[in-house]
Length: 283
Image 1: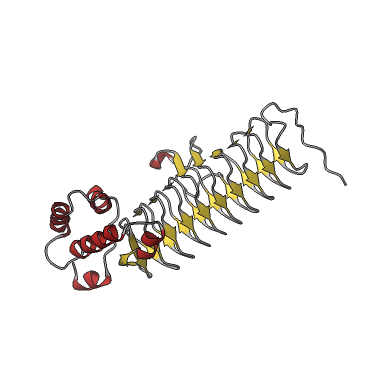
Image 2: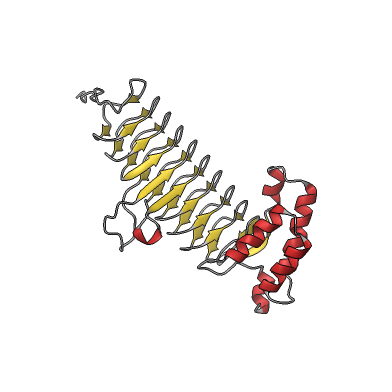
C-alpha cells in the first residue's frame, strides 16, 4: 500500500526540504532549508529543525526542541521527550542542540526542569555515539564526544573538548572541565578538573590528558607548566585552598593553569576527584 504524500503546502516547510511520505511533521514545526527527513520519523509541533538537518529514519524529535543547522540524527534516537525526573510536572522546558552535531543510533536527550533552569543545552560540533544519554538540565560545551552507552545524569556540566569513554557514567551535578578525558566504564562521582584524566570505578584522577593536549596543538612549554601546576596542586602538603593560592602566585599569567584554578575556586555541589595516592592518604 502506498502511503499518502506529506502535505508540502505547510508554509513552514521550504520547498528544498525532502520528507519521506511515511514521516509525520506536526503543524507548527519549523523546518529549515535543505532538511532531509527519512522514513517513519515524527517531529512534534514545537520543534525547530535548522537548515540542513538530517533525520535518517525512525527518529523522534519532540517537545520544545531546537536542533541546530547541519546536525545529523540516526535511527531510533529519541530527542526532546519529557525528562526522566519524577518531579517533572509538564513545565515548559527546552532542549537546545547546536550546529554540526552527530547523534547516533538510540541516543536519548531530555529537556530541562524547573529545578535546573528549564533548559538542557548541547553545544556545536558534538558527537554522541550509540545509546548515549543526556539527562535533564545538562549543559554540554562544544566539540564534546560521548562514546557508546555514556550516561549523563541530570544537572551535569561538561566543558569544551571533553571525551567520555564508552560505558562511563556521570553522577548528578558533577562538573567536568574542558579538555578532560574520562576513561571507559568510569564511574564519575565528583568533579574532574580541566585537562584532567579520570579513570576507574569509582574514578580517580590519573594525571593530565596529555594525549588530548598534544593532539589539539598545545605548546610543549604550556603542557610542561600544566604538569608542574598539577604536581603542586595535588601535593601532600597543606590544604587544597592553600595550594591553589600558591599555584596562582607562581603561574599568575598562565591561562590554562588559571582555568583549573578558577574551576577549583568556583566549587560545586560535588567534591573534586583527586589522585589515588591522595585518596589513600586521607587528604
